[in-house]
Image 1: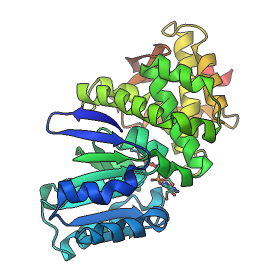
Image 2: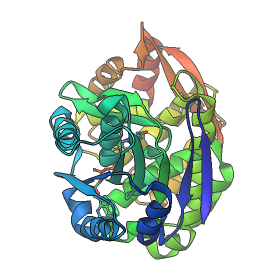
Image 3: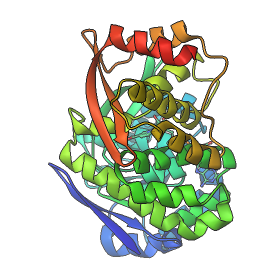
Length: 360
Ligand SMILES: NC(=O)c1ccc[n+]([C@@H]2O[C@H](COP(=O)([O-])OP(=O)(O)OC[C@H]3O[C@@H](n4cnc5c(N)ncnc54)[C@H](O)[C@@H]3O)[C@@H](O)[C@H]2O)c1
């Protein structure tokens, strides 16, 4: 088993990474959390594959378990579903010392985490991530949230879990589409902070069989990168923003398509390429780095350009980015692979430069 220990202001917790750990969790929970009531929050897809047996096995160990199941997908990450979770917790008289267990991808983790952060002003919270994105990214760092019709993640908090149990073998049932989406974040982590991870990813292409041999290592490396960044800047006021590499343009692309076109991973994949082209043209990035990023993204079937792009729509969408503060925006870029940096740019200057890059 590999373990990443995350030390933040308020809490120190472990991310346990081991193929097969999921089946051991009822025993582990009995040893660590005996006497606590458990709310297992999961979407209907994940629950139907893993939830029933998990709940039954926990009950056999003597736990009172309340499953809270919602319809899979980002469209459920809202106040209505959050309210359903609150109602279930209240109806079953959950107390502060009881635990919300998030079994699922980033949608489940974000929403269950926000419920745990706010119900009775904070209760126990454990994550069992089941998508690659959740394993390498969303289960680490304590950002929990739901969406509003006006935008994604607008209601949220910073709330670190008590523990994360990551079982890469759960990914065997994940579709290629969602697997690739998580790959974009994994590649991003290597690109901004770990040249060795980038090189190892670049060696292999999209062969999930070959990859699965190395998956525990990749997930461990990725968690460790995010741990280091989050420990330095838990509340996202500084260096944590390098995790937004590719996201300024990526989010704008998602917004222009009304979140119904390219997936998040596909959009940030294109975003990483375009921002690197842009910073290369400004002399901030070594020449040739965008091509290296393209090489690895293409190996995993991720897109690196978008021909239907309407430059002025993308620029408008960047301007309403929540990270845009009084006409200035902080951009994450790389000097070279493994060396992520931040720069504050004038929005107008960025728009002009993007115009130049995207038109070519
Ligand atoms: N908190 C953070 O720091 C952070 C970081 C990045 C993304 N996010 C959030 O994460 C969310 C996206 O998460 P996601 O990509 O995991 O999406 P998701 O949770 O919707 O899962 C994607 C799909 O995969 C299915 N699924 C999950 N695990 C499965 C498995 N093992 N086998 C079969 N099917 C499975 C789900 O039912 C769903 O249909 C977004 O809401 C985003 O805002 C949060």
